[in-house]
Image 1 (cartoon, rainbow, N blue to C red):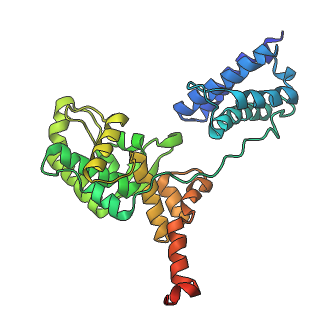
Image 2: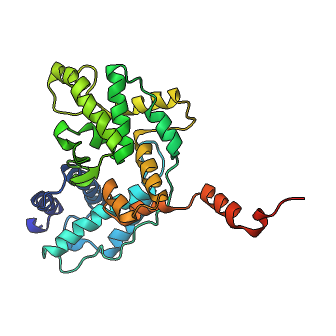
Image 3: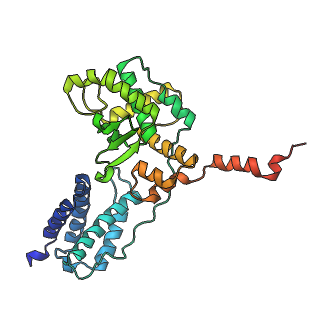
Length: 313
């Protein structure tokens, strides 16, 4: 066999190509994991040469992905299935674009249709305010928690993004914070509201100095022992204050993100501005928040239907 046609060789060239393009490390690792699964599938079919891959092989792989079970023994979601296909198609796009293949056999291999799903839990503005005010700000960790909750609701940043914030990423004078290497390795600037700014400023001045002295770590929000917050700690904090606020909903840090986006759009914020704040690569991801809720429909019906304006005799 000609070594220049070896799948493992081109897999490594693709990895180098992604590194040269400065793709996020997590993206590279995940793409390679998925393409390694594809290469293993081809190996079972006796294919080790890129020129031996046919449309039929890729159609069979599409079926393989569909019937693949996850660690729980369940069929993967359509989003997960599409990740497998996306990695494979990206690999072939590279092979064709670099001239290793004269044609792209993956062209036309379809993605699964993903049903549009709305976020399961959304806080009302009143609930968000109640939850944010739940911490006891007369204690150091209570003040830290209040500042964290203010930032989550004000900016809608993700769990890992708030974990990795550093004091220098926050500009309270101008009312912005910088998300460094967010999802997909992208940086972005996010508005930070005046109330959140006040609590962050006070937290840095009154609380963080003592927490940081224990380990001297560079992160904005620290644990009592001076360590970086882990995602489970952040989830626990949100869960505990949800119970304290007597909000009968399952609230996670991500619910603040969903709620903030929904509240902005309900107040007629420009959807592209919301897209930039959330750091969505595609507008379609943001548009799920524009779905009209049944509450909105009921209110419109009551306000404008002719029969709703009449008195009942």
